[in-house]
Amino acid sequence: MDVELLFTAAAARRVRETQWYPSQSLRALPDGSIVMRLRVASTTEILLWVLGWGSACEVVAPHEFRQQVEADVAAMTGALPRAIVCANDQTAAGVMHALARRGIAVPGEVAVTGFDDVSVPRHLHPPLTTVRQPIRELGATRLRRPLL
Image 1: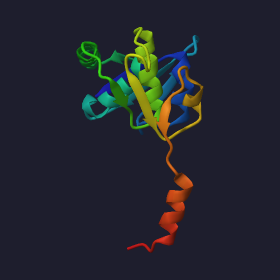
Image 2 (image 1 turned 45 degrees about the horizontal axis):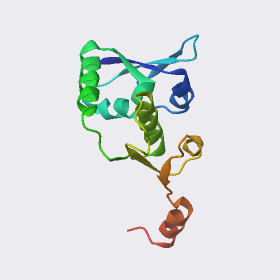
Image 3 (image 1 turned 120 degrees about the vertical axis):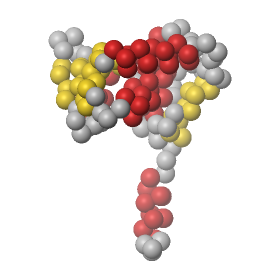
Image 4 (image 1 turned 60 degrees about the vertical axis):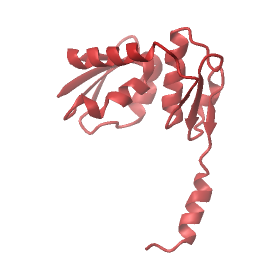
């Protein structure tokens, strides 16, 4: 299935930094936004990833996937959770952005936390609460243990 996504100019740099999917192709637009085209077996495999970008990502095609994302977002806009724990800081930044665009106060109405303590989300307002992964310590521990 061919999917086309439109990312805001604010998200474009991050989108270009990573090869998200083997089949992806990117096209920059004059306003700084970026179009990503990719082929997936099923939109189920990218649904949560797309939702994680919040309002920084718009589904252009296929129409059925756009409707699914819109329905999922609408279902989430009812009762707000007290907190959202994200698997990484990039996703947390997207969640914070999406909440702010909808006028939802972070952390007043919804607390958001990330996991990996990368540098960019430190500059968000309000600052992102994140869990630092002790990468050096984890690596050192792994090297001290024999491989089985």
